[in-house]
Image (cartoon, rainbow, N blue to C red; front, side):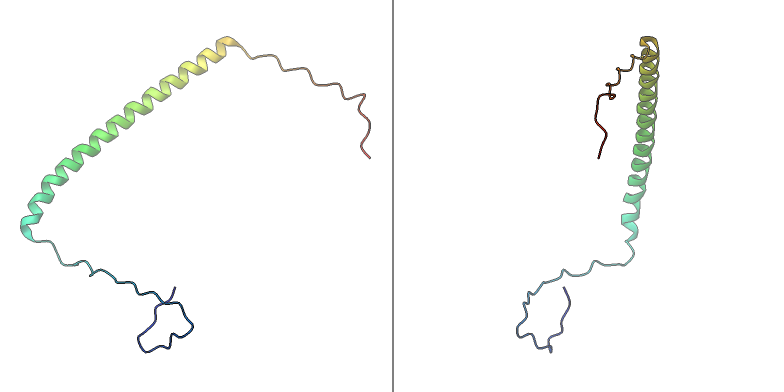
Length: 94
C-alpha cells in the first residue's frame, strides 16, 4: 500500500480510496472533567487493590494444592520402570 497524490498518473493501477476519520483533539481536558477523573481514580485504585488481593489468594491456593499433590505423590512411591526390549536378536544396520 502506498499513498498517491492527485497529480500522479494511475493508469494500469488498482486504486481504492480510503476516507480517514477526523483526528482526535489533543487539547487538555476541561477542569470540570478533572473532578470525574479523581472519582474514577479512587475507583480504579480500589479495584487494583482488590485484584491484587484476589491474585494473592489464587496464588496461595495454587501453591497449597501443589504442596498437597507433591506430598501425595511422595507417599505413593515411584512406579517401576518397564523392562527394556531385548535387542540382541535384532540384525545390525547396514
